[in-house]
Image (cartoon, rainbow, N blue to C red; front, side, top):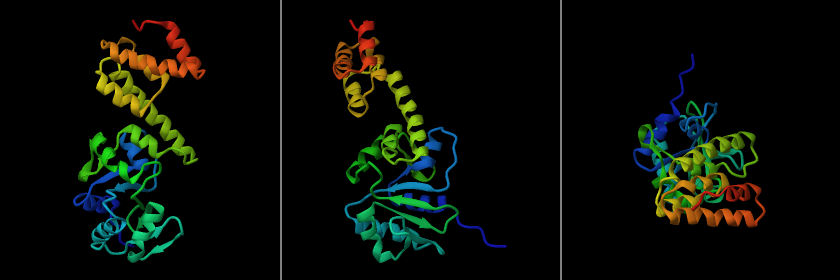
Amino acid sequence: MEPSLISADTFIHALSAKHRVVLLGGMAIISHGLSRKTKDVDIWLDPMNTAAAWAAALKECLDVFSGVYLWSLADRCVLAHEDVAGEIEENGVLRVSGFDRDIDVFRRPNELGIESFEEVWQRSVKVLEGGVRLPDPLDLHISKANTGREHDWQDQLFLESLVKARFKERLPVCDLAEATTMLDRFLDPECLQYARTNPHPEVRALALKYLREFEAEGDPYSRDILAAGGWE
């Protein structure tokens, strides 16, 4: 009988005990409440100041585990430790294999720059087991953009529903600062209409401004919302 493989979670928790780690991919979607399957784990390890520092941090945590190896997703080959910094600088991600499931470790996720890690970390909505953080639905939605994969499209639809639910909850009651922050990140006519009953005239004015811009671009949904009135 072959010995069982070490859990990927064991490594991720060891990594997150020393460094900031954000959960991405299918496991993050599942943690937000969508029932679906996934074969691997995607994580975003703090990019640090340099690719060399990032590679050294990863190596330090990997060295205590036997039978694991690094894999280049771009070149489909095993990576030597001395090649990790160059690999991650060029491609932004590599794979750790040899645990009970593969772990894709990102320094630069899809559609999210290295410089955005701090904001994503601060906006994270939940601290998971081991100190790993769950990004907010909109940040996760961005990481799923423009991949061309059907399951990512389905994930985006689910995440968008969470974003819109949050707007429906907050836009009727929030102040201008919160409304501005929200609308700087996501604009949608359906969401803008939730500001109609906000008690702050400046919040209603901000939503109206965006709706009129959408209407000027020919959006029929915005036109109908404006025609319905009720913004006084």
